[in-house]
Amino acid sequence: MNWAGAAFLFVVTQLIVASLMALNLGFYEPPPVEKYFATALIPVVGYAVWMTLWNLRGRPDRPLRHLSTIDWTPLARLTGAMALVWLQFVALTWMKAMIPLVTPMWADYPLADLEAAILGQDAWRLLPPPNRPLEFIYLTWPLVVCGSFVAVFLGRRAHREQALFAFFLTVGLLGVFGQYLLPSGGPIFWERLGYGDRFAAIEIPNRTWTAAARLWSAYQGHAISFASGISAFPSIHVATTAWIAISFRHWLGYAYLAVIFFGSIILGWHYAIDGVAGIAGALICYAFAKAILRLPVPQFGLSRDRVT
Picture 1 (tube, rainbow, N blue to C red):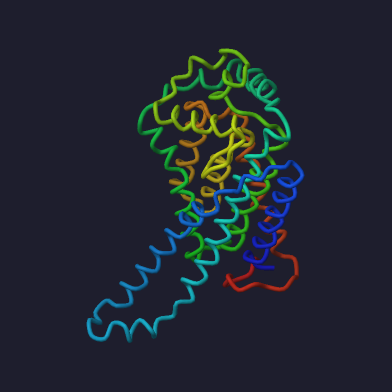
Picture 2: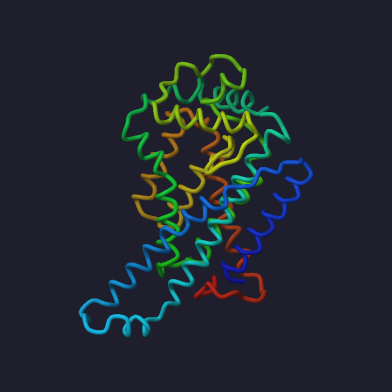
């Protein structure tokens, strides 16, 4: 099996499950399909512009005729890949929006207490206060993840197919389905959830606080919008960043993982155990991807090589 076929089947399964859940719950709020679609188009348009300029270099005469001779297959493949990414995050947001209709956020106390039992106190107290560069790096995580996926897709590094399919397993298994195992809001929503002021002393920067207020408003109103929904365990921020580190196996990837892991705690989004679960889950999904891709089934057309 190649990564495209496996990812397609997996994403479609998630969308079917989300549709059935929405019908059963009477949740008729449509997911933000258009906004995710527009976001997924950004790298496609960028790559199309790059291909055009690169192939027209040194050929000022008859550029339109030359464009007709270019092999646009790589662009078509990238378009298909980003369509899968688009649908994957539609499924994630859709399922996350239905959490409060299925279960209350009951796991915050167990997660926070387990963390404190292991570390001797809440993890955020062991770390420095937040700063603007950290907040900026954390808030720009979607751009880094999207760019990393495109880089893996266009690259020719070893285990390319395994990495691509592992991305969908990481977001799907840990995010779409995993968020229902231990539903929790995280330290930043502790007081809003009615649990008291245990985490009230965390210094939340303005932009982070604004983002949290928007998420809480959508959570209370059972609304769904672009990048909405509340779910702390496991941390998808950390899990997808771990996927980046595993895929590239470069010191920059490991450094970025460390920043996002500790940043998620410092900024109040997650308990430390959320990030640990995200890293462990990403490692498992990466290994699981290899096992699935070895299955002998018909191939789709977005892939160039098989996992060996």
